[in-house]
Length: 412
Figure 1 (cartoon, one colour):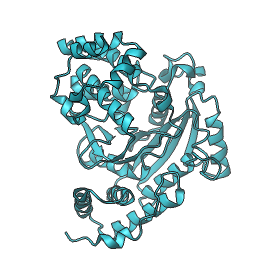
Figure 2 (spheres, one colour):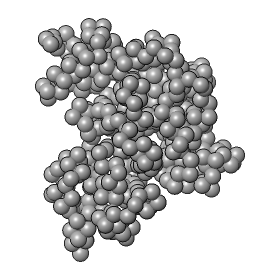
Figure 3 (cartoon, helix red, strand yellow):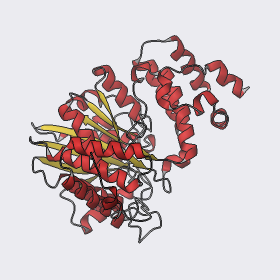
Figure 4 (cartoon, rainbow, N blue to C red):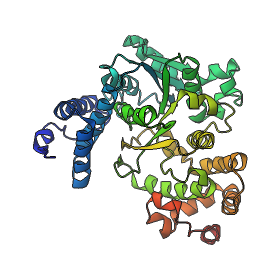
């Protein structure tokens, strides 16, 4: 397959940024041009393979080819079905604004709506909606979002929910929460998905959750739909760690993430074939979601792991890993300040004890993680063993050489 890259390179926006709406739209226009030139999915994937093998393709072009493949997948869908996309908002009062109104503004709500419309507008078989959930935001992100939707006359395709309302109404999805303070993303994600599931019709329904920021262009949603619609998978997860992933991520978060992955894999061997559990871009078939969404024990950042574990225990090896393009949006990230890795690991330890059978290795790691203080965790992050830091996370399925004793030696 011969590709004249020069024609596409001329169309790439300079100084690409996910907070620049004009440049995001330029990438979408480039994706449409590529799709026009290569309308077949097989040709587009060959194009992508050549880009990845070159190792020097600009980020906007890599994103554009992901978008073109996604849109080609959506174009081929010939049966009616629904797509619901939900996300949690906490202190998003800056990122929800346009860049012209705040230095870290992404206009995230209207951009997400635009991205979904760009993807689905040509296929009348698909009905879609966007659901934002206020996670008890002290800055009133939910009310700001409602006003933005009203001003832009966009209430038909989007709605704003408040976790506080679910708690006051004693909805079953919030029965374990006393106030929004008990949630950090997880409670709102669960509420958004549960709410979407209540409105399902007889036709097929896929429910997606994503992050509030624009790290993942929602025009890639078609990449998640394909394994659910044509490969008999029940869950599809966007991954930043596949061979065809494009991920722009800051160094310290990447190294710390390796330690997190190594440790959770020692706890939950059932999910060992997965790597990137924390990417905020996952899709569930409705019939699977309604089986796993009730009686969750996690309402914070480890909800991804609990949902995946429950889905895996329901039906084995039905989770698809999908390589995506992902660009870190760290400026207003709440997880950067909270640094929730130890909190998540302690939650995962609870999941191991609730859902999994006992394993000798898992028992020792569970006890060790339960005993860790924040100060000890910080010390481990500063002195991550070379066996972990110098390996790729997919190797941690089989690489188990760093033991609890090794970790204790670091702390001694």
